[in-house]
Amino acid sequence: MVKIIGRELPNMPWEDAPAGCTDVMWRHSGNPIMGWNETHSCARVYNSAVIPYKGGFKGIFRADHKDGIPRLHVGSSLDGLKWEIEDKVIEWRDEQGREYNPGYAYDPRLVELDAKYYIVWCTDFGGPTLGLGVTEDFEHFTRLENVFIPFNRNGVLFPRKINGKYMMLSRPSDSGHTPFGDIFISESPDLTYWGRHRRVMTSGDTWWQGKKIGAGAVPIETSEGWLLFYHGVNGTCNGFVYSIGAALLDLDNPAKVLYRTRDYLMTPQMPYEVSVFVPNVTFPCATLQDAATGRIAVYYGAADTCLGVAYTDVDRLVKYMKDNSYLLATDDEEFR
Ligand code: BMA
Image (cartoon, rainbow, N blue to C red; front, side, top):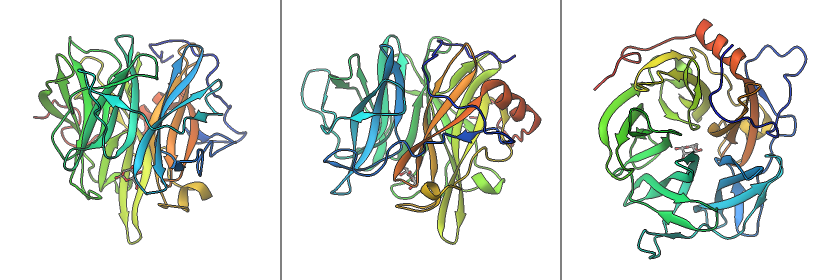
């Protein structure tokens, strides 16, 4: 039995695998759970992050507005599936209380760390890079120092310190629709100064992830390692295809990959994933999980238009990963 190390979450969304399903992940039958025109200002709500909060759930949602610009909104839910999104954009203040708002903000990740809620997102800093902020109540938001200089995306903070250091996954990129990218890890004593960078894993030679990869959801601590859902991108004559894979990283040294799915776990297939605004995108940004049952719900953006949920359980997934793992050169080393 693989153990999820963390809290019990009996009220998380869940559906058993449909009869006859041989896949490791299966989609929520009510997908997509949100999408177009959720509030007056929001055109499309997709790549977004959720977390348990006071017996219910809170989320930080990416909404592209009707001017085309992505911004972050708070949402609340009792069951993790039906959400109330606030029309108001999150307003940030710096640590001195001065307004400190990004021109655009997208692809948030949300983690509970030291009894606070930290948000990492892709922000503008003369080019895309990682913004970092914190809230305790989802009403007041303090923006901290930007994590890196441009260009960087897909920042994911670990839910606890490792060997006394905060740890952040990221994907150095370029200013546009980057045609390359590997996952790196950096550490910090204080969430301000980041260094001791290591490369975790490369996009490599399997076609579904051969163009680039990026960390997806906050890693889940398990008895077998840190379970990371990530996106892998393939280039086609019609553009990029974003699929979902998973890796298990060493608990004490997450720069080392223990197992990694040779094939994708999920690829765009449903109409809401293969058509609409940006076709062929499944982009994981968050999970909910229950330590008692091993259930995992993955929240993923679909086609840059809407938000879907897919389920797996930790035993089934880790067994599959061990049986179908394919590591690339340096994945299992501390590469620097
Ligand atoms: C990436 C990010 C994501 C988006 C994806 C597919 O570069 O911008 O927000 O979902 O492209 O368009």
